[in-house]
Image (cartoon, rainbow, N blue to C red; front, side):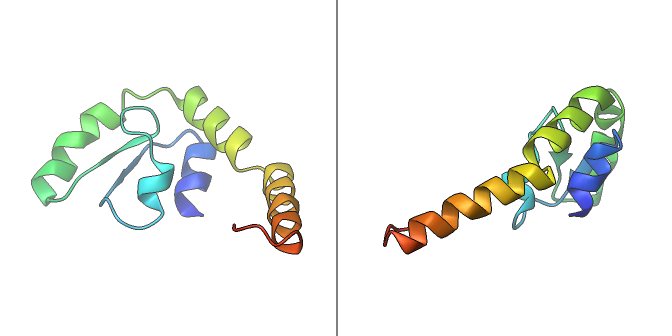
Length: 85
């Protein structure tokens, strides 16, 4: 949740490419990935140039409570209907 909250506030993310971060971060739009300390440091100036409004919109539209509720209902329907989810 922290990356989503950060982007909702217009704050870019620099993270190690792992777990759900790989599904969330859009390289060059909402943040950057780095694997070493040197890479993290090198990404800071790039991250500071990202558009805060774009990050806010991405978080608000893609991860709102309404969107989550709709996705859960759709998943439950697929389970009830015996479909794979």
